[in-house]
Image 1 (cartoon, protein in one colour):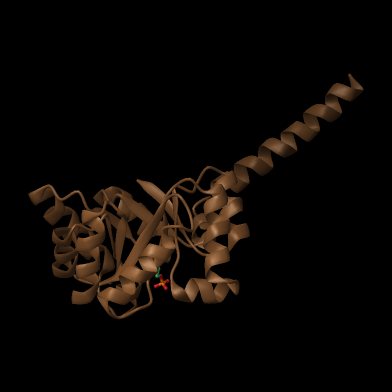
Image 2 (cartoon, protein in one colour):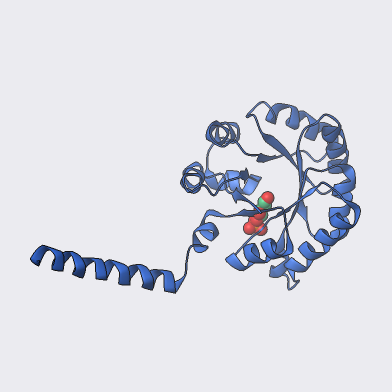
Length: 219
Ligand code: E4P
């Protein structure tokens, strides 16, 4: 499973990239607002050191406006993916961009029926929001299971990009189900490292090394 990082914070992306954990980046208008920098400058900076796909979200509500934005975004880096909302206008854009060989990511997706529509329109990625489903008392990962079954039944090449990931269990379940990608906020990515036995084991080794070094000096 590929790991994308779900942020527009350039230093957080650099940090995760140094550990070899960034196969791609996803952004959205809220993440751009949170990063507090100019949209184009931010994406261009990310694209200067990330080779993988970078999702950039369109803001227009009509297909014509979205296509204009897409034409602009694709010049911001070598591997820009056009992020489009799950609407009838959005699917017109996916169909058009897909025919031009431009990658797309269908976002704010909450049902298997919506995922099927995105796949039929020719989306490169579809992003189901598991955390937001959990928030309203639905079982988000059930959607990933349904999508995997449907895409496999018909051999769709559209990739399942698990989004709105809130904890390590979301990531682990995504890998067990066979999702293609999970996009993870930096803090959740760091949580994946945590295990009390790892901390305990490292502390014991360091302690033994201190004793051993002391002994070696004396001897
Ligand atoms: C990614 O493509 C989505 O925009 C993002 O994962 C949404 O996450 P949130 O529900 O935590 O805002």
